[in-house]
Image (cartoon, rainbow, N blue to C red):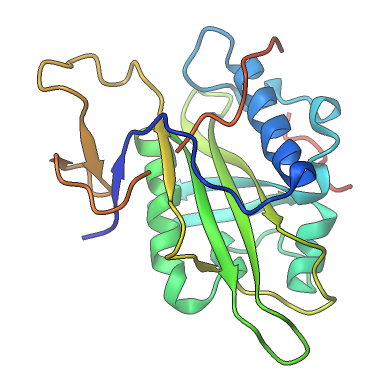
Amino acid sequence: MGPILRNSHNQGDTILDQAGQDILRSVEQNWRRMCGNELTPLRHRLDPMQMDLALPYTFMLHVTEPCSARVRVAGQKLHEMLRSDPRGQSFAIFFASRAQDTIMELIDATLALPAIVRIPLSAPQGFGRKAVRAECLLLPMRDAEGALSRIIGVIVPEKVLKPKAHKWEIDQNRDLLCDIQEGYFPDRRGGQRSKTLDGHETTQPNIRLVVDNTSYDDQAEPAISQ
C-alpha cells in the first residue's frame, strides 16, 4: 500500500528562503486564478507571463495512463538539475530509483483526487556535491477535452545547485502535504475523509499531507523554458 493522503489545511514546514517561497506562491496563485469558479483549470488558460519568477523551475507533465507521466515542458533550472534535457522523458528521471514508484503514485493521486501536492525532497551528498533539500509542488490541470491529464509544477531547491546531476529522494524528516480540492467529495456524513493512493478510504493516515501556499488573488501548452 502506498502512502496515505490526508486532507490538511495546516501550513507545513518549509526549508526555502523567501525567494523560494515566493516561487511556490506565484505558481499556486496563478493556478488558482486559472481555476476561476472551477476546481481545476484548463491547460490553455495558463499564462506564463503571470509566473515569470517561477518559469526556470517549472515543468508540465502529460499523464496518459497510471504511473506514466512524461515531461512536456521544463524550465532551464530543471535542465541544469539533470545536466540533460528532460523533455519527452518520464518524470521519474528526476528521482533516485527507490523514490520513483512513490513519486508516480503521488502523480496519479494529484489527478485522481484531485489535489495540490507538495513533496519534500532531498539529495544526499555525492562526489563534489553537498547534501541539499528542495520542495516539489504538483498542481492538476485539465486538457482541451476536460480530462485531468496534465500537471504543472515546480522543483525549487533550498540553494543554488552545484553544476552536478541531482537525483531526488523523498525527505522522510519533513511533511508530505496534500490539499484535496473540495467539491469532489460532497458526502461529508462521516466527517473529513482520508484516501490511500489506491482510492480506499481510511481514518488512520501514516503521513500528514498539503497546504494552501497562497492568499487568494484574481487571474496553451506554453513555452516554459526560461
